[in-house]
Amino acid sequence: MTVTFTPPAVSVEADHHSAAAAGNVSAAAEATQALMHALNGVEDYDKVLLRAAAGAGKSYALVTMVKEALANPNSARVVVTAFKNRQIYPLAKRLGGELGKEKVCLFVSAKRLDEVPENVIEAVTVATKTSEIPEGATLVLGTSHKLGVFGEPQRLLDRLGPGGNGETPFDVLFVDEAWEMALHLFNKVERLAPIAVGVGDVGQLPPIDHSQNPWRGDPGYNPYRAWPTAFEKSTTTFVAELPAVWRPIGEQLGLWRAFYDSWDKLDCVAAPGDRSLKLPALSGPAADVWGAVATGQPALLEVEGLPDAEAADIDQPLLAVVEDLLRSLLTNGFTFTEREYDDTGAPGPVVSISSFEPTGDPLIVILATRNQAVDDAAEMVERLTEELNLPEGLLHASTVDKWQGQTNRITVAIHPLSGAAGLDEFNSAFGRLAVTCTRATHGLLMLARAGLDDLLTDSPARPGTPFGEPGTRALPRQTHQRILRTFSRGVWNVTTHHDA
Image 1 (cartoon, rainbow, N blue to C red):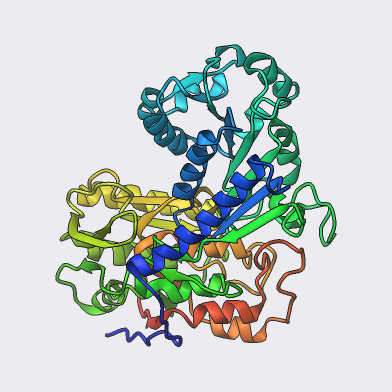
Image 2: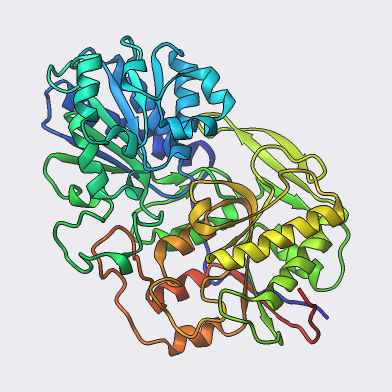
């Protein structure tokens, strides 16, 4: 039996390489200039927001803006915060390496000290108490929970003294992954500096699921909404967008654009053909499925003929299909090739990564939306790793929520609507599907039980942006249909099944 994939129903024209990256350089320069004008008193900006799509290189832009702020004569000291420690650690390592260990302090809870990676400890000064922060530190990094605890802003002021502004301990507050931080948490750290810079992906998951939000539907103040939404329209806020993405292969750009369809421009540094997947000898449906993934185009495989699932999110028969497909791919190994780029996006040499000796990000990550489905996938990963003697770092399983901000080469994901009876608040969340689809640098394989088109056709209409937040938090059927048109699609009629 063969599985035939139809090509995506959309075509994409875009700038690539240096032409694409130049757009980000220009946008980041505009945001940096706005920050400099605020520090120099030329403009009265108190917020600078740099919006980005997934994989746009926003961390690079943030690091550049931090260094520019420290070089400004009116800025003596800056602070960097985020919602999660794992967002802070890589920034601390990079900034410590560039600015010097004695100037950069990672301010972390004593309960989290054992979790700090060794390479971060080597790059920065680590403090668990305010009194341990070096008086000569010009950059402090910590989560909003650590920096915003009751009384901490005053303790920091007592320890470090005022910054160049003469009143607060820091001159600029940088917030990484700003659209993941709720307004009530930002309010606790906002007093640390007179100017706040938010950098982040507007397509990430919101701070909390809006079904739990007591201010649901309120177009005004909402302490649980992503904090930049409270200031984006203010006359004292400067907003810029990074118009290019570095992460995806060029063949995936149509999918990225489907999530950011309101943007005027979205280009891709990687051109079609810059990255590839060399497959082992395969036969039958596995050859067709992995061949579709190897084209670089996002691939959706709908499976017919499966026995009933225990629930939409506990689907052992569908996971058995995933396991068989992965076993076929992993048994004899495969190779990635990818072109490297310099900081301007100019193409450089081509390198290869073998599945027998994986390096860097995980090669294959299995993503699902619910914990039970991921627990089942993790058991599958353990079985395959032991059965095939796979090297560490090759195969990983995670919930979508925990994997946001991470990168891998191939994503194998269960579509959130697989087996669903309708569009509910959870399975149609904008951020959850966006994160699922935008982790991969080389290939995306989405699997679902057959019937997605019928589900979307029959589902009642629902509003796309009912909560006034960035992006469409609850996706209407039309948005789901637009996203599906960017996939190459195939249907596999399974006449036999395997016990999981």
